[in-house]
Image 1 (cartoon, rainbow, N blue to C red):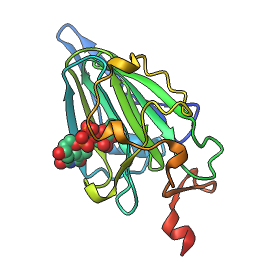
Image 2: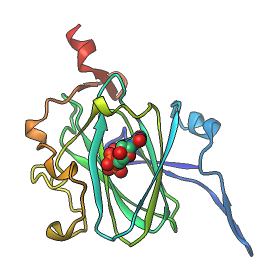
Image 3: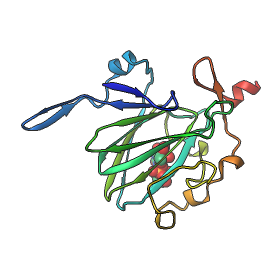
Image 4: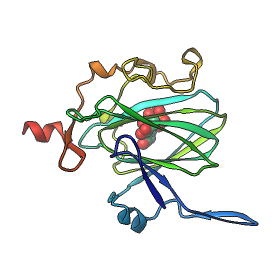
Length: 200
Ligand SMILES: Cc1cn([C@H]2C[C@H](O)[C@@H](COP(=O)(O)OP(=O)(O)O[C@H]3O[C@@H](C)C(=O)[C@@H](O)[C@H]3O)O2)c(=O)[nH]c1=O
């Protein structure tokens, strides 16, 4: 398992080793000890899967607020997608900046999107299936997000804006400037403390 830093160090690209032979390949796509070796100490409690039929489907940008904030380990098992993580940690030197990664069934790459980031993706092929592990359960009362095409984010989604397919919920999400982020950057850990803890 290669763990590759990105432009925002808290976001990591994971590349599982593939053992190819005449049948195809074998890969460990998740290994607790290998992640621990790489300094990633997370307990995942739920595995999610979504299928998007059309190329140009955009899901995001989403996060769950504390006390149900989630780290996400995202991979593509069919098709190809552009995965996006936006830093929404107040006080972070990279606040408002983002990381993108092309994840595909072919490349097997995974993106680790930590707490304090809004996450989304655009499908770059039809019938794209995404699987991701999360460190907290679904909590609809903590569900929040930012508008995917917020010009302040400057994300190149590789998708025509007027043709993108979104949920009714996602077209109404606020701009980053309208969001009071619940995450505060912690320079000691390059992670987050919940705003509630800071104010306590
Ligand atoms: C996320 C989620 C949704 N649901 C339900 C709620 C709803 O009826 C249906 C579809 O939910 P959504 O429209 O929120 O699904 P979707 O837009 O695919 O949401 C996902 O987007 C990506 C980008 C993420 O990062 C995820 O964390 C999640 O927010 O599934 C669960 O039961 N459990 C879950 O964990």
